[in-house]
Image 1: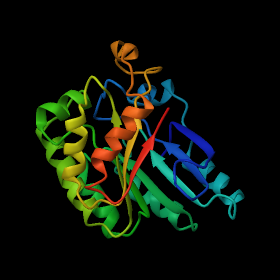
Image 2 (image 1 turned 30 degrees about the vertical axis):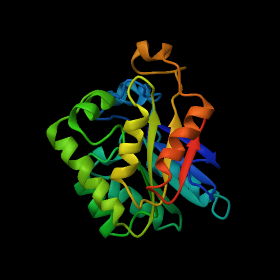
Image 3 (image 1 turned 120 degrees about the horizontal axis):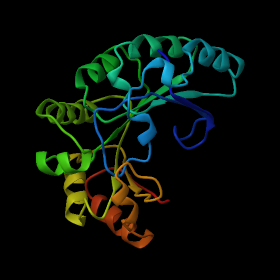
Image 4 (image 1 turned 180 degrees about the vertical axis):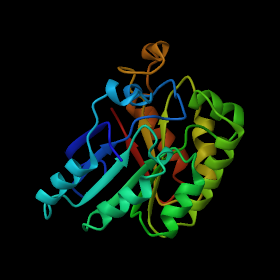
Length: 237
């Protein structure tokens, strides 16, 4: 399994750990507010620069004792059938593993959890779990994807690892009531992160003119979610 990008060292992507972040290419969503649009398309091999797994493993070996964890993000990593074997290789060298996912491959997620290949999962919840709202926020949505998103939420609510749900909050897509509805759906969750929308780089150009909720508004949204989840975190741009 090859990767489309890599951050050598991050103090933000795996809370409490020093992590290397790997990015996969390709996604089954097209969220209009996405800031990783360059990763969404699957180009042919001769059209892209890829980082081979062997080079990544050599990099990690050289930094054992300094790097604690690896985060696999995207794009959408669970689109790759070879993901479990890649994770096994990374975990086999003693690193913690965090997966960032949109939850549309609940079968893959279930397998990874059963095989104890994950230490931390961060799942994006794009909107309240109503089909039309989710379709608008995700850019495209099949019935199967929507079923899998809900199944993945249920899986993670019962998982015995670190779990984070998160929503990028966009005024044009999310009302205060929408965000509270998401928090209500995940009542009892360990952590719900509210990420402030960044209009500087968006997949849909028109969203570049959308104003984000300001810091005070984000804190108000967090207070609405607080009764439902154990911890609410606000990530401001």
